[in-house]
Length: 356
Ligand SMILES: [Zn+2]
Image 1 (cartoon, helix red, strand yellow):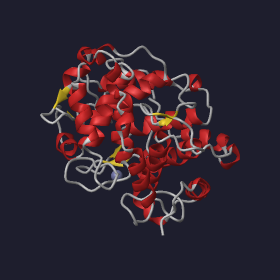
Image 2 (cartoon, protein in one colour):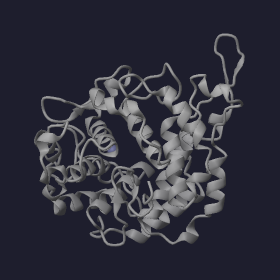
Image 3 (cartoon, protein in one colour):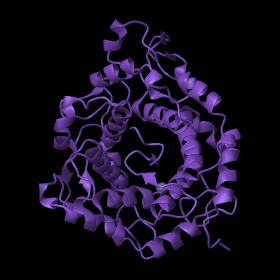
Image 4 (cartoon, helix red, strand yellow):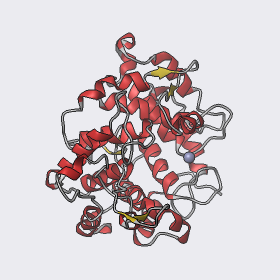
């Protein structure tokens, strides 16, 4: 029978276990090691877990060892991104399929770079001691005229996720926002007929985003908030001044709370733990979080809480790190005692985000 309370101690044990050794099911996700580490370390931070659970020095050393460095100043302009690799194996040179030659190109990417920066910030590492120049300089080369970003190197696809990762990384280094960010709304400020934000950029991701509107809407709205295009709690202010249609977006988000209390990513889909964060965060940014049926959401999330700690995607399934992390963030949004308040735009505890 599902527990009727948020089992904080079990969640800490679950994350502690994943910190020490990931189950074999994660083998195929080795390439995403930094992202998985972000879920564990930021999760422990949100759960206000004692510091002794994480060897901060060892974590910082491991994360910093994954930074890509250009071999020369001129290499910085070769169109590659010099951020953080997703894992140790991502640092290995890859083979050219046509002639078997080893390619030494960097395969660091925007998503793992933000995870690296977030982990370092959470464990209290001084970000000013990171070589941020190569990250920011090569990131500028990835930005397109419409304000969007390619995630790895020039010529790659662009989409909302990468604008969001770039925005967070730039914020973390306290840089002045890149000028082309001012044109960002041309790319993402499009509301569909029903209120959600839609991606109108180029590349394969357009299809992905049409299938995942809840996540795309989160990336769009929080990017706009990070870049100052949306004021905090805009609902209680002059919504007409916004570049998005707030009432329409609010309506679309609130309609995603299903009869079972959980949130769905789009109409006619089952409720899923992670959308309590994706949609809940958009509502928080807009100032519409107060309209959520919190009791019903609380009840749904508890049906996804595993007896071993962690959360699953759907009720009764096995827990996974991704849904566990977004389960914790969802409970933080519900102001569950024992959880730190969340900075929804940056996806980490508000206290860790201070200074970003
Ligand atoms: Zn999910």
